[in-house]
Length: 349
Ligand code: ADP
Ligand code: MG
Image (cartoon, helix red, strand yellow):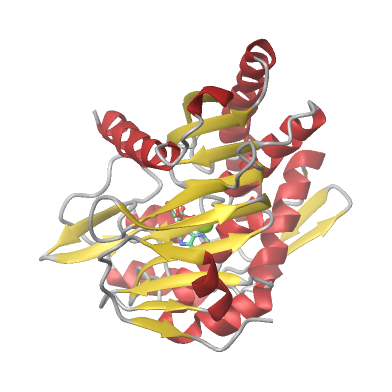
């Protein structure tokens, strides 16, 4: 039932995106469910048989990556986390190695605001599970204990294919980044098959390459506080658009919202941000950056974006103010009638 609701929500979002497409007949669409969301593949100008066969390969890849990179369902990441918790060095496969190195690199660039080793905190909050906690907060002492143990990627050493760890509270959860990384692998697969005009959209987070025929792809960005699209932007060439929002997964206790993006410094859901949208060339960086900037919040996003090499950011704070850098402002088109206070930052280099 819950999956069904997510499916419908994502379908609506992807429909609203494709509703911008006037020349639908040249676009091949395929959808499947993976990474807890609906994955929507759009291929422009690709012959039907090739399109179908490549989509089945992409689907199989996604299913495989989801199992291999899941932090709580039996698989290589769970077994790695067990070794890390026991401070045992272990070997890992080249593909997992590459993924973890990239996650660690992005974490360092974000000064740990994107922190892929806070799996124990995520689990304590109950966000590891499909079913969210009902009306109950985790024990504040347990949260403090975990925060004080200070798990960071600096605790992890990777030498050749051997990974070791010196902090037993380190536990990988790639939920803030794996979807982006998977989309990058899928785009690689498309390009290897000679497909250069496409979008892979995972529940509103996407990477687009090439064009929609003679014109750019047009992308919708969801309003964090009401259903529908807040703004749109155009992509020609290669760009990923990722949004982290406090509406994706949350529960309420005494009328207060507790969502799934945790500030590793406090152990609690990050305050002050409703959503962050980032545009960047690769999807893995965009995904990690959207999470990091969400945590950085209205006061910290600019310096974090600068450090992570991000050039386009829109952050909507919990008061509804829209913070953005000038380059993002010139790229984004708000829906007519949109009324919000726009706060322009200094330019990002
Ligand atoms: P979504 O997956 O909903 O698009 P995000 O990319 O922001 O949103 O990822 C949120 C997920 O990332 C959480 O469900 C959790 O698994 C993990 N996570 C939460 N806080 C952080 C953080 N500060 N750094 C890295 N990962 C996080
Ligand atoms: Mg993310």
